[in-house]
Length: 192
Image (cartoon, rainbow, N blue to C red; front, side, top):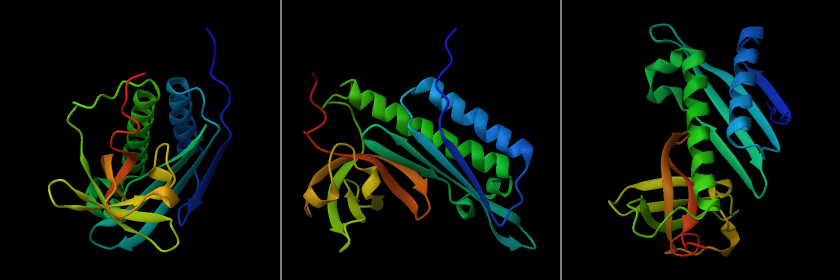
């Protein structure tokens, strides 16, 4: 049996005490990602306890920054949108599930398995921030979604324009509903 390479991992805690059990769980989850996608260059996991609420308990936010060749993937869960995130382990589980989905999307695109006729969320770019770090997409059904420049697959925000049609994956992030794994329509969906 071959073991995946050791992934450089940085774990940080903000407003919450670190625990050996939590660090062990994070390391296990990162290793599972490494077994699925062996080309991970580095991983940062930040666990943060947000405001203390007397009636609702503590809310936790977990953010994962994963670097793979040519991409930086970011997954995070906003606890205010789900009361289950008063449990740090539930927040951790959900953030790692979101990262796994992003890696699965990346693998499909790298293998050329995404086809034009598949039904997937699409829309067009309606806003690009002046500093070119984020933008907004208007979905085909009229909703607006935030996306970060690191969510772009195969393109740079500097090359995109208002009105550019895109495909994306929808998820809940720090700013609410957002788009990840964003790619131009027609450019990255050609079977090789």
